[in-house]
Image (cartoon, rainbow, N blue to C red):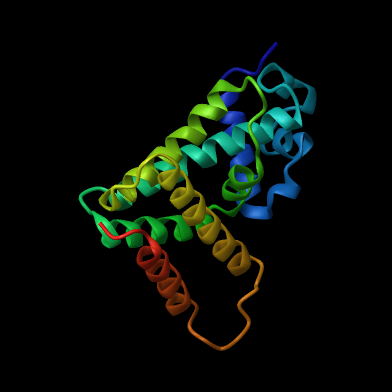
Length: 187
């Protein structure tokens, strides 16, 4: 019998807390069970296993990151929206490293409509952020891919201690975002 008050959302929330605190590699069913005060087998009433739990963390990360990007960009346009969204992306990755890592590395499985929808939503927000450039079709896809790739690369290097020189990292980030904005087709 399932423990009263324990449900999938609570299990995933415990997993996201572990992933954010100690890294995605620290996420195990036994660790989540310990945090929740239950035995590991009882988690199977709520998740299908470790892969399903990681999928839940990834979905939570995508939803949270999408909300952060949307909130940062609302009421802004052009380079201002891009700067705000990029800053929110960077802040989210730093504040929620486990969720970010899960969302960044998880690829949707064929037929996983929920994950595909979450991925499409974040792409939609980024496309809207770039809306002032009036990009169409393939140009919009290429621009969103370039933006995501650049931001992911920066936050990954930053998280891994890859910016060891005594030069202002915030200024490097600002210049990256400005270069992205300048590289987009003229409006």
